[in-house]
Every structure is written in C-alpha cells, then in structure tokens.
Image (cartoon, rainbow, N blue to C red):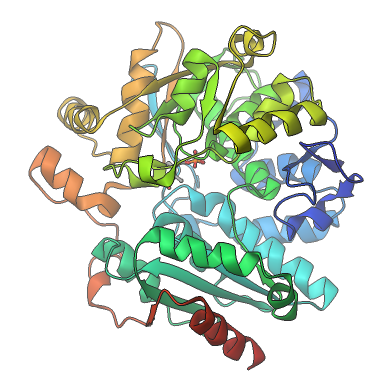
Length: 474
Ligand SMILES: *Cc1c(COP(=O)(O)O)cnc(C)c1O
C-alpha cells in the first residue's frame, strides 16, 4: 500500500515515510493509492474478533511496511482495558431497540481522540527508535487536541511535546488534565493571549525551516492518515456490536451519526463504508460552525475567517475549515489531483468553492452523507431528553450528534450515535441543562487539586523559540 497526495504531486510513498511528515510536499493530504475492500468472508471472520484482533486486521492493511509482529505488539499495548477503562474498548449502549450510543470517550482524556492518538504515540516512538531520530512536537490547543496529544506522548522515548494554550482560558478541568502531567518530556506553555496567538506562533515556527530542522520540530494534527486508519476500527466494531458478534449474524445496514468539526472522525466512517461495511447513511452533525452542513446541503464549501468562528458549548467542533474534507473531495472529483489543486487554489483566493450543479456534487448521495446543524438550544434539549427518557447523561458534542441523528432516523435501520466526549469534561453545560453536576469517572474526582506544571509566557515568538531551543539542547 502506497500513499499519494490529494493534489497529485510527488512520488508515491510508503506509510512509514508519511507518518512523521504531516502534509504532502505539495500541500495536499496523503491518501492510499488504491482503495481497500473487505470480502464477505473477511467481514464474517471479523465479526467474532475482539477489539485488538480487529484493529490489527484492519490497520495492518494500511501500514503494510511495518513488520506485522511489531504492529501487533503496538496494538496490543495500546487497546487495553487499563487505558480505555472498559474491556470492550468502545462499548455499545442501547438506549432503546434500534438506538445506540457507541462509547468512544473512555480513554485517558475522556474524548474520542484518544483512540487514534494513543496508537499514534506508539507508532511515532517505534519509527523514531528505528531511525535513531528524535522529534519535538509543537502544538497549540484550546483543550481537547492538546491533552490527547500529551497523554499519547508522555514518557515516550525520543519525543518531547511543547504545547501552547491560552493562559486562563481553558476550563479548570481541561487545564488540570494537561498541567497535572509531570513527565519530563511534556512542556506546557500558557501564553498570555487567546488561542489564535498560540496558533500564530506555531505557524511562525513552522514557517522557519532552519529552526524546524535544527530542533527537529514537528506538529501533531488531525490529518495524519494513521489517525484515520485507527478510527476505521470502531466503525466496524460498533457495527458488529449493533448487529451481532456471531459469525452468521445478518449483515443488515446501519446509520451512524457523528458530531463533526474537522471531518476526521466521520471520514473514517466513510472509509469503512468504502471498504464494504454495510453503512447506509453517514449523518454529519455540526454545531453553529456549520461549514460542513452548508456543503452537504448546497454544494458550497466556504471556509470561515477566524473572526467568524462562533464560540459554542460544543467547543471541540468550533472550526473554520474542515481539514480532512480534502480527502473526500479527492474521491468526489474522481481522484484527480489537479482538480483538487484547482479547487484549493480557488479556496485560497476566494475563501470558497462551489460544486453545486456539477457531476461531482451529484455523487454525494451515493457516498452516504447527509447533514444537519445543531444549536446551543438543541444541545440542552437533547441532553435533557436523553437523561429523562433513558437515564443516560451525554455531553454537548454527543448531543449534537444525537439531535441530528434522530432527525434522520428511519424505522428498521439501527442508528449508532457516536459518544465523542464524557459529560464530566463540560460541566457548565450540564449544569445549565440538568441543574446538576456530571459524574466524574474514578480517578478524576479531584483532578483540579493536583499540583500543576506549566510556565506562563508572553505571546513573544523569539522568547518561545528560545525556551524550546534550550529544552531541546538539554
Ligand atoms: C475533535 C472532536 C470532535 C470533532 O471531530 P472531528 O474529527 O474534528 O470531526 C467532536 N467531539 C469531540 C468531543 C472532539 O474532541
């Protein structure tokens, strides 16, 4: 399996050569050169597998230049009941017949990003050790991505993490989650400023090739193919859990509803469907930052300016553009890299492109996507409704998915709503909806009282570069 750029440039590369790269050299995203399919027999065999066996069966297809035994060992160390606090890793809860919640948020940071990030941490450490190389990851976060990255990379050989966050602007829980890490390879930098100031510093450093190569700076982002591959696994697992783990279970179609921002999670569902998993609809749920819903309804893809991004009560979906979307458009335009390059040039120049009325847009229905927008009011109503009717507490992001999922629900087709975070992370919204505090999982009760390890710095590029350089020389 080799990987090519969505913009058609460069030579095909092996998986491990793309792993530490981020973007392809022409600015595109890496995608597999050919499309994977699973046969009926393979699907039947996968039904009876546990999470780790299934993960290996699927992920190894995309990472076939890694020795199988090494990948197997990495997967076995990653998807454990200790790390994901459940022997099923992604347990399915049935709210009523035909309506399910797929629990993706039982990892260390209580959000679905752990499922891919924990494997990515192992893969990075493995490939760096093979090459005798090191990597210093620089990132900016307003919460979720940063903590998932830190928990994935903590204590790993050959890796340091420098994470910028806006000083005193994250929730106390999120702050405590990140800053209570005391591993010597994790550096929390609280920047006096807002998230965009942090982001600008990361961009400025990334635009300095000399500094980047001298200090082996890399980034962690949602566009790494390894994350997509790791996420394909729980679509299969969720499908089997809803339709039966027995080898001769009926292969009927299901729908998935997915709270979406950067289009990384639901894109993995699309890959699973393309591989042959019987998924009827992929229901894209956005919040008020509805870049994706606008596209699926109208054919117009319009990136927002950062000043247009609304702060919502499902903050991990507050995006200005959907990074992984380019991979889907690549398929829509018939895997024509030049066409994608044209569209992204247009996006760069005009802030949008429009596929309405084209043959490309007419292919959307056959790819399974439908979409909807959920608002703050919808989230609160949905949290109340699920609590009242099923006695289950869901977080704001999950609520966006459940709301839009129910709007599209059809009789006789099981609906799986992805639970992307636990309510404990977003207690203010839970108090607003239910007038009570969310429960905290064991081990997180007093997280705010743990000692915190961080430095506060001005949004000063030179000072932050000097801080990083000094730590990297040590
Ligand atoms: C990141 C995130 C999302 C959005 O996922 P995408 O892959 O960016 O579409 C949804 N919910 C939660 C809790 C998240 O952390």
